[in-house]
Image (cartoon, rainbow, N blue to C red; front, side, top):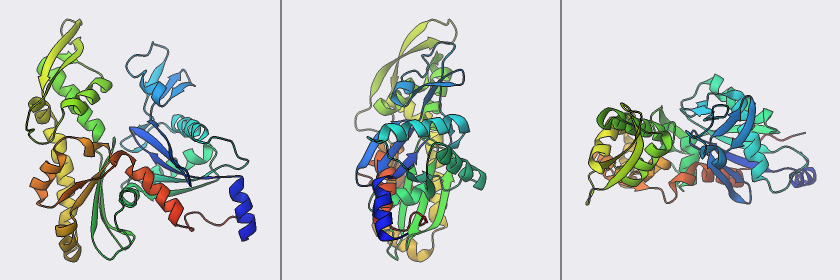
Length: 340
């Protein structure tokens, strides 16, 4: 493409980076930064979209019989193609302040362990939502770029991105992933563990939003200097009546332990596959933790005990992948193929 034509083309289009997460979707527009951050939730009435994002999440567990609030992505991949397409279309439209004549070029972050069929589903959804070009970047690479790791150096960098549906663990050197592991155990699984605990121990039925609130308010991966407690309201499984119980952080930590062990084992497995030269770099550089799971209290202490390596929590773990797609768009002129 001639330089002048490329410049004119940019006036009529835009480049977008998308962190298409199981729990949340973030949209980055080149030269503008992150412009949208909303839950990956769609409320449907029959086959019609009633609400998307924040508005739809408020409906989770509270919808009348003819309205269904769903998450179209499961374990980091598309579970409902048509609804995902509608969600991407909605977010693109909402994120762009003014419509342009040409569809956007989109860079989408995907889990490193998804299949070729799942990759194609992501691409097709974006094209059907109006994208002109679609390129994919693996989430751990995007997260590493987003948190500022020197991925282009001939040295070992390790990133752990704990999202809603998957935990991505990768060792990166010279702009490439040396070894990665995608574990379908992450934030949503921690919420489910809390729901199961409340049901079996307290005979209390709670929803996803309440489980997430418990995790955020008193959840922890390691013992706390001062243990916490909170009241939880739900429905008694036996009587069917509303009920309130008081729970403590120690019991929630125990409820989360099995899922946290799965994440720890994924990290240890990746370290076991790390080449010796790069492993030596990690002794000094340590491991960087990103994603919403990085916000769990005491996670850095747990991982340090299990790996004996320095653990660094990203400055803004929730934005790491989206920031990485944006930096990749800003710094690379070859993300997308030239158009005739």
